[in-house]
Length: 116
Image (tube, rainbow, N blue to C red; front, side, top):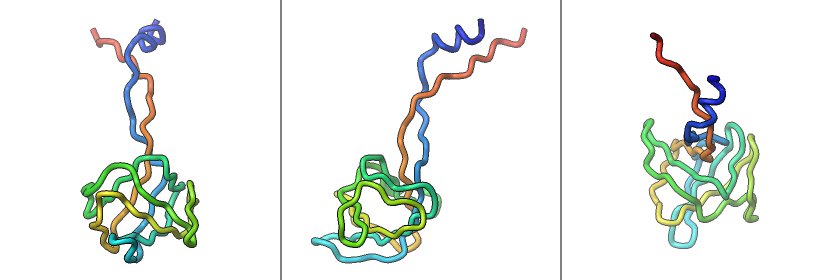
């Protein structure tokens, strides 16, 4: 019965971090600043959402403009690789920033009955 009740509840959105990277260097790129990154865990995927985190606070959240590996446009950069990142509408990268790549997934809520 608990399972049936849980299936009837609306799905919840949950953010799942798919990759993390550190900003190592900054580069001038077409009137903007690109971030030189090293992927520390997971992978960065161009189509997903990105967050720039500084001092534990998100200073940008959204889509990216460009993801490059050795001047070649790529869709994915795996753990251990270095890449360049350019964000349309954000030009405030700093060395030491953390980059998170994430996607939103829907999960079924857990049904917890009243303890009576």
